[in-house]
Length: 338
Image 1 (cartoon, rainbow, N blue to C red):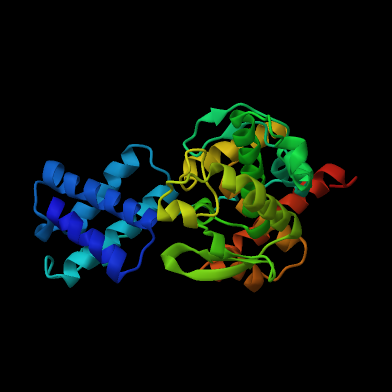
Image 2 (cartoon, rainbow, N blue to C red; image 1 turned 120 degrees about the vertical axis):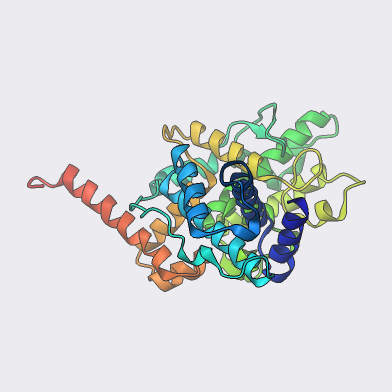
């Protein structure tokens, strides 16, 4: 089984050009499917049929997996059986007949424009790139506003801890601004390199799902935050012995390595608490919010599709429903005859 999964990994990476995140997810699904075949169905991969696939999906559903999760599992299984068919392990592809349970419409959680502004301006604690926190210092906005006067914060007798803490504040400000300004996925944010930012063109080059590249506008507050981080924060966190990946990375943890996804989630969570937002907020909430605010501001769906990197306009259309739902809620609260 390990040999089969290793070959499948190479297929996903080299032939299909899938992102590292997608490769891990598809391998995880393939592994659970193979375990099910061995332990429950007691058949070999060459014997997979539609009944075995449906049995595996039903087992996933019995564990409480959501419709969205089951849909992703079914898609991963179809990719795996297509690979097995193409390589001659299967004579016919049973995955082509596998359909997940119908997904209900789920409107994403979004912030108001004021909530988003408060969140990107006011994280309270530092995160070191591994999910651990370091001592707090003034807010990210205060650190950013002071960035033009280095002597105010980084005097000759400043402690190393204070220098690192301030650098982390500047990094957090840049990360939060980019998430909201450019509607980035968290995986896209941590994958950014220094060369991804075009300050003159006010854009960022993003490598999205399926290794598809897009160029997205960056707002002035985000550019200002990124500039302050690159000039004054990043040199503090970049170690002399840093590996090539860290030297190329835009965002770093305090250990000098590329910032990771978990740390960004912690940064967003801490900022939401400081902003007084009671609901659970994730990096994807900022992406949803940015798209919804664009639609509410009059942006056409095709532009929003390009902005988000959606392969299908149908995926982008969810934001028209979000805007309509928000409008309906406002009318019901404010209109005297609602």
